[in-house]
Amino acid sequence: MVMLDVREISKTFRTPDGPVTVIDQLAIHAEAGEFVAIIGPSGSGKSTLFNIIAGLETPDAGAVLIDSVDVTGRRGQVAYMPQRDALLPWRSIIDNAVLATIVQRGDVAAARREARALLHDFGLAGWGDARPAMLSGGMRQRAALLRTVLWHRPIMLLDEPFGALDALTRAQLQQWLLGLWDRLDRTILLVTHDIDEALLLADRVYVLTPRPAQVALELTVDLPRPRSYSVVAEPAFAHLKLRLQQVLMMNEADPQGALLRQRG
Image (tube, rainbow, N blue to C red; front, side, top):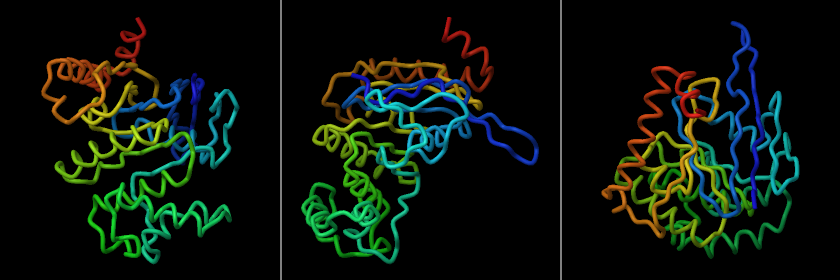
């Protein structure tokens, strides 16, 4: 069953220099429980795509459907973790984690109990009452993911969650996220610039063209699960990585030509 269906969306922004089309008839989908990665060059509209899925932006054309229900322009339908952790510095980790419940005027006491019970699973045991400034970069990202999980939405959008971290911390958190996804049974869409990250985590990868964004390639990642970081040394991984690199390089050299070749 298709849980998320993004149908032929387009988005143009008005600027002092004239209209700028960021997304042009882009279509993607994600099935229930699937992990989908989206990669593409900087400025290709990936974050705009997520803002549209999250209801923060309204497309000029097309629609966003969740379980066949049109949710275009409606906020609160998905859990969204932006590029920066956006933790409120004056709140404890627990109070940051339950922010959605506070905003929605839900049962905050119950949400705090749930958050505290999950601290160990998120590698934050003993840090629930700490302020964000006391945490390392990796711990802050885990805290932001805890907040996203506690939003209790079946679809999670992760916009380059590990992009600002060092290579070792990023690799550790990628492996941790795989284990978390196995336990949560959520549908996850991940924006990343890292080909290895996309292939390690995802069931499918969409490659976007330079602006205006269209789908240049939809690649099935047929690597066995559960996956560990050792998969990056396997020939099958290298073959998939080369395929993605070729399409990305064609995108940079000739965006429209690359798109036509993939469609052909």
